[in-house]
Length: 603
Image (tube, rainbow, N blue to C red; front, side, top):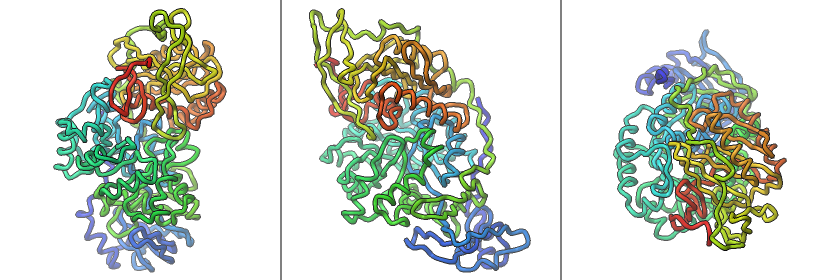
């Protein structure tokens, strides 16, 4: 077992308050004074010119027109030169594992982009390693120089009876986690039918969280805003990031929830929902920006929360309003307003020096009063975190797979069958429930590449049962003989294999079993791209830049195979997520998520 790292948590405000007062009054000198900045004040919604900041013990002591009284011989003076002073950005809902990297590497990648606080839900590793996996990420988060809070996963598995993951967690586990130092709340409650039906597990987990005074995260993935939605809200979830329409955001805010608008690598849900503010005039205090899922390529090349804020501004929000949604609103939601989310006395000195506000051009990043990055380059020394051997070697197929494992037997005597097909929707998490007439060849149902119908399989990988569920998927556009396999398969994280060629499907699966997890593309019997992810089959132990480079080669390989989807890997990895409509696949079978029940492959 990995030794628990020393906590990087700053001293509590109660311990340093007298020192803050002394610096504000000029009786003591500051550690750092930032002069001549334009203060982006998210409390008042204004930009205050000619502002100085005095910082001591990692917290703001003075924010005002002249901090000369706080400057001493040992005070570091930073000239902002008229640039903007922006609170450090917060990602209110995200999964580190979607970046293909560890918490440490995720922080290394996003700090230069201005993210200084994250609220992470490690339900991916929880589905593989259970409570011990959550503890590993919880402890790693404590060692970061920024604020990485952990939400205790609520749905492991996400839909009991419709999938079997590597672990099962319940109310007792949630109650235990609520006693840990760094647990901030309950992760997204994805079993929305269970909440509406008063499922005892959901009721117990939410109650344990509320008793601990923590925030309950939501996940209502249905477009139905009728009684099931009202029952879900009454059950306790306090936010939701699954909306895609303006009316979704309106409905959530009216019911007292926070509408979390996400822009991840593949989810583009801000533009439509932000119209609730820009066109309908709803109060922006109840809207929060987040990413949900961002892979390493996006982080390294495009940005993180700076990218989301920039995008929100492009949709018509005032820059200060967009920044409020990525700072103060998140802090208030998690009951941390006195700690972070703004530049104000007593708060942690997490702030950015920005030269162009609408473009979110981040010049310098400070966390707890220490400069962590400048001009897009990380300056902080963040030591690598070693995961124990028990967190690796988690891919157990039970046997070497063969072509025959992917055969789909046709009904006796049939020359053609009508099959259910999972339809991928570009840039959105939901899928469509499609149907297709497919030919039968030598007793087996064949794919139809011309109609963009290829095969998908979920291979059980936690217990080595040898179980395989076969089905069909459309939307990837593969035009060559190929297959892609991934041990990232939200949320049960078995192995998903999608391909146009069964031999390539078998080869791809066997490669990942040998590598201990990851994602691989195979074409005509040859490996053409690979991202190794040995930690729980979900995360790499390499640097984010290296992972991003390998992920780029994977994306290019998918394009060469004919796939034109934006961020197709993210679409691939969610095809087994049996809590988002309409049609999914799991180790149990083909799942109709509109009814939350298993259905036959053939219509």
